[in-house]
Length: 312
Ligand code: NDP
Image (cartoon, rainbow, N blue to C red):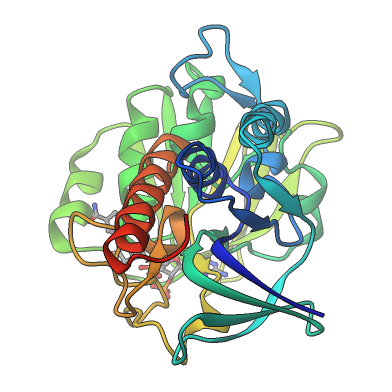
């Protein structure tokens, strides 16, 4: 099966749906392939309180349903499927969905997002959303005036530890080596924050709690000593993995796999291919910033198609 279209959107998080709303309203008749996790990372979260327009907050999955319905309202053709192979060296570009559906598209918007890395211990999975989180900016507020723990030692972990220190009475920062990977300035800020306590050479042994987190047990990897720290929130900040693998042969990425866009735009190194959302953002990673770049990608796709005299 093969079909030729104007505009293909790959991915269904805030970036993909926003791109779809704009592209559909511009008459591009976009087709979206959602990927496996329809709605993206937000369907794995609970309350979202920092997305403008929802003064009372909203559940992540409900918000993504709203995004989807808004994209559908303007005629986006939303389909379930994964891009498994692309050829961006030809025009129109070729994309294979689930290995067997072939799509030819003039403009392609990449919005496949990123995934948080997890420690991989069972209690982390069991208590995910019940005290365990991979996003302090999203969930820190729920643990204000309590003690929390954060694991990681990169810039994200430092930034999130500092963010949490302003909301929480104490932040226990678990660092697996005797030094941090983060930039010197971020490390210094952590050290200078009185209510952040760093545990060096320490690994998470177990997150404790029946239905919600009530403590974390850490193990000193030099002495083997176990320490239990009572906390209500447990934040994992050990990095993210952008979902860029399938595009890498054609699309320029940085050394961590994030798609490189021309600064201030959603343009990639391939004409007519645009990238938005967490796939190209390792700094902000917010639903609202993803939506903003989704809008940029669609506006640029529309402009590019009309400059080339393609499509509508
Ligand atoms: P990084 O890959 O830089 O750091 C990951 C950290 O997690 C490391 O300290 C690593 O430890 C630790 N880690 C990894 N796996 C485990 C594990 N299983 N158990 C315990 N600890 C673990 O990821 P970041 O998300 O921090 O940053 C990604 C990129 O984004 C970096 O280039 C960073 O500079 C950038 N960034 C920039 C910001 C800004 O400019 N404001 C803000 C945030 C990020 P170890 O060091 O031992 O390997």
